[in-house]
Length: 455
Image 1 (cartoon, rainbow, N blue to C red):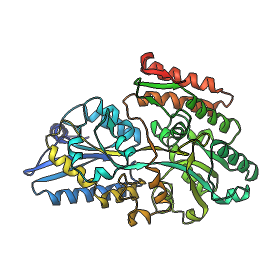
Image 2 (image 1 turned 180 degrees about the horizontal axis):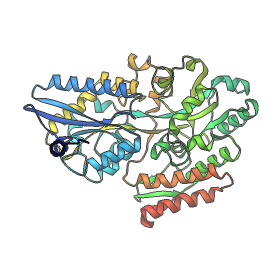
Image 3 (image 1 turned 30 degrees about the horizontal axis):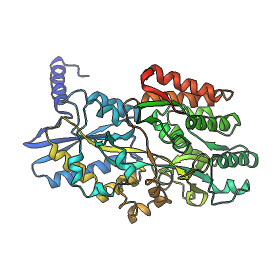
Image 4 (image 1 turned 135 degrees about the horizontal axis):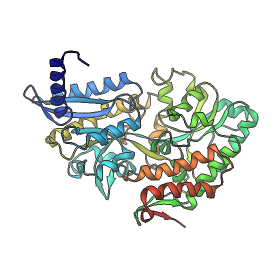
């Protein structure tokens, strides 16, 4: 961008030198430099909150390490932008961050490539790990070994508008026993409250696997065969009674005109659309994430909605037929991973432990819309009093199911989301046709030897 040749040459040399030390740990004024990379515009509820949080982490780290300093490496953009940037940076030791805030649904991509350090030895002597619920521990494990530590999770529930339920004659608090109760409520809303969307159920490919985390994955987990990846055969499930149950519910919803508009479902910002629709009085029920109330209670992603606590309520997502355990949820979020090639392993672990302290986890939970992964902290007054229903979502951690983190999950997810998108765009699509779409897409990407059908 400079017009003088000598400045251009100097700029290129400077940029090259900067790239060599931009992420890999180096030195800064005689101090050891540790790098941490994170999503700066997507993960937290606002860029300002992300900046506030990470500046605080840096201040704490630098204050505790006289001979070291923490270099912040913000990554702007969407979920997919963050994933792409990490996948690129990890290819070279010169750009790989020492520590990174990584989406748990993609951990398998980096773990299988050897980019993440195994952390079991460090965790064995860490008090905080013992207070993580078992599903949260399993979320970052591969073949029984741990490669990252959760810094905040998302779980799901049914959000519903109590005023609309009253108009439809549906008693509240609402506690649906099975999926039929959900469809029945949506039909009654459609009849009694015309002009609103009865039920939001995420569909299509616009959100990647994040759309499954906040949508159909919850149904699969509550189905008769709650399996996406079969650990015994090491294969991806492309047909099963549970998948057919799930896709049949999609068909019931979208063929009866109970679901959201295709333009909203297929929007790049689809996962946040329900927040606005609820606030505008245009949505009755949603399969949604724990961060909704937090967004409504402060000036961040959406304008504050002081009435939310009076208008809205939550219910657990029931299993398909009310079978045990009676409720289901996905589990996924963001985790701190240490680069396997870091030259500063001890400092990297010090940073992970710092991030995992109570105040930092609670701040991240409140400012990013997480549930703290530490069961001791979900009852912290700072967390509980931040927004309505915080303890409710903390309880869900104990029975939620982690979404797969295997490196091939994205390929399976593409097939599933194409199947749900087909049921939205063409409601005449049969369940058999939707299963065929899932099977075809996943098999082409993964190969016949990596997919299976469950009876």
